[in-house]
Amino acid sequence: MGDNVSVLNIAIKEFEISIRTKRFYVILGIFLVIAVVFISQLNSIMNTLGFEFKTPFQQLFLTSFSTAYVYGVTLLSLLLASTAINSEIKQGTIKVLGAKPIYRDTIIFGKLLGGAITIAVTVGLFYVFMIGIALVFGAGVTGYDISRLLAIYPITILYGVALYALGILLSVIMRNPTNSLLAGIFVFIIFVFVIPIVASIVAFATAGTPPSLIVEYENNTPVFTQNREFQEWINRYYSTYSKIIILSLPTDFGEICSLIYGSKAGEDILGSLTFLGGSEESVSIVEDRSIIEGIILGLPDLIPIIVTLFTLVPTTCEVV
Image (tube, rainbow, N blue to C red; front, side, top):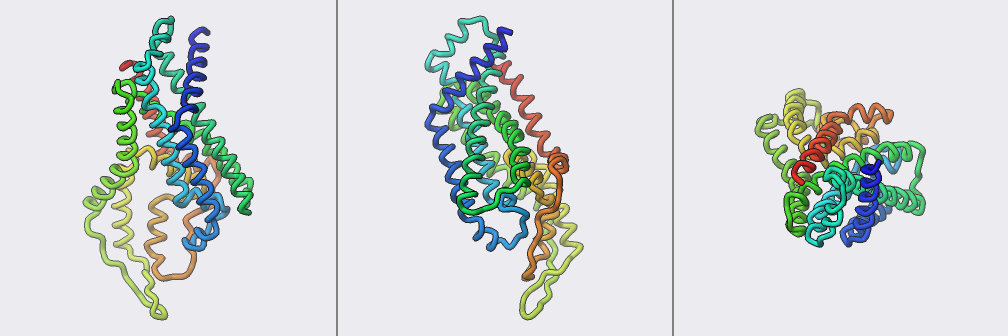
């Protein structure tokens, strides 16, 4: 019982520290700007893309807004956690905890719980603000949207805690808070830029040179017709790409959010876009799907997040 109370006390303290940092308010501000910019541009985005969406919020989570949302949660988790331990060592406040009969595991679990609370509060505020802005700009908020947002919410917290655990590990390994903060930014760059680039290069090398598309003309407008060889090349490319990109946790998280909101699988979207050509008809990148079906489809992307969390926590406890 005493340990449980200690975990809760540490968690509350961690939450209080997090919401007092400039980093927290900068990232929260970024979230709010994202909401205002994207929701205010809903109609123009839909008209430009020409895709068919069920609701405005589905459109948001299946376009660039989803990327911005994923990046925001990633930065929030990594940057807040990357100084969670070493800053207290530098300030000497960790000695207060060390002088008490508290296990090191308790400190780590308390920090993680505090991070989970911070992420939950931040994302909750973002949801409320986002829905409010949508209503102001006249974007409909349906039961479909609310149910999907509620389904994504706990997965967002799980993902955030996994990244928070990685940030804490950096904070434990690196005694200098500035170095661990920079390391957190470096990890972010690896996840969102390096791994996708490497995945694309390896996938192209594995799939080989893509065959030429068959092009026909209707009223002087080029129209790409279905080409079995090109589709087979896409399948080879995506098969390799998906095996590497799964190492990028932000990509995994973004894919889960998209699938819950009804997005088609990546290879299906590529196939649809390949044969769009100059046709004026809309491209459907969504399909009717229940939340449970979306989560089941997203399990391959959810597993790396869970494995990361349950691998990093005991590792961090041993390193401390």
